Amino acid sequence: MTTDASRFYKYISADEEIKRWGIYITGAGHIKVDKETEYPLVDDPSHHYFHWSVGRRLTEYQILYVSRGKGIFESEATGFRKVQAGDVFILFPGIWHRFRPYQETGWDEYWVEFNGELIRHYRINDFLNPQNPILRIEIQDKIIENFSSIIELIKEEKPGFQFIAAGHLHLILGLMFAKIKYHPFEGKIIENQIRKAKVMLLENLLNDIPQQEIAQSIGMGYSIYRKRFKEYTGVSPAQYKINLKINKAKDFLTTTNQPLKEIALNLGFDNTDYFCRLFKQKTGYTPTDYRAKNER
Image (cartoon, rainbow, N blue to C red; front, side, top):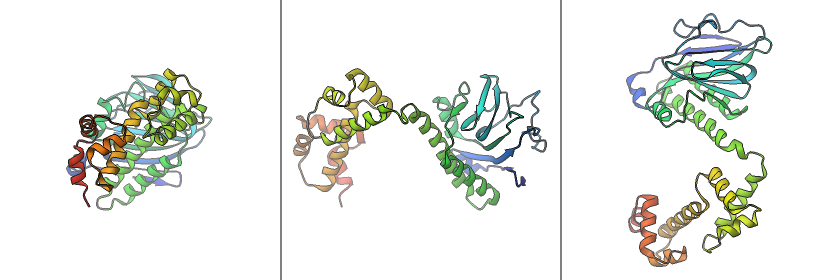
């Protein structure tokens, strides 16, 4: 462990119990690198220290978040990339890399080292991709708060701290990818248009309002409306409305004694059997089983 006014970092071991948790941390730190400062820091442990001329390979994953300054990153998968405040870059096991702040700016960095079955799952499913290791997520207080929480937990190492630290790491990953998903819409007119469309779908849940009419009312062509709506919500407008109906059906099933046929008709389903099949497809339960499961 190294700590002073400008930096803290610590590497820790992970026992078999925390490894079974699916995500575990093996180190974390926060380092302020002033202008004209040698980097990497010369007192890093030998298994993590590297010189710019040779780079390094890790056995674990790392996320490094730059909160101030600028620099450069290079890996065998990407070549040279510029890094600036608000960028996070991900280091992958076995992949050669090197990075450093510019001498004229320095930088402040937060980092965490980790591994686990969940992380390998995210990599297999392309959430973590060595071809795209640098993500632009801007300066986010919540991300810095979660890095700081991990660091405080590692400093004290109280019983069970690894489970809480893993939760903070998971939240960091969630905030990162939520930002990437949301960024194309942030502060743009289209965001307000999609929000209006969602309100119209909710307000007309029990009415058969055509999607074309919604598109026209928010000032978009129908094909563009469907495309942008799915990019924003993850589902098509039609599927979004179906999901709203299923949620409303849950309310009817748990708060009323209405027969299934009446619930289906109230939600615009002419065929009760179709409604029941759709409900089970979306929830994993038949309406009857869902009602019984949630009886008060």
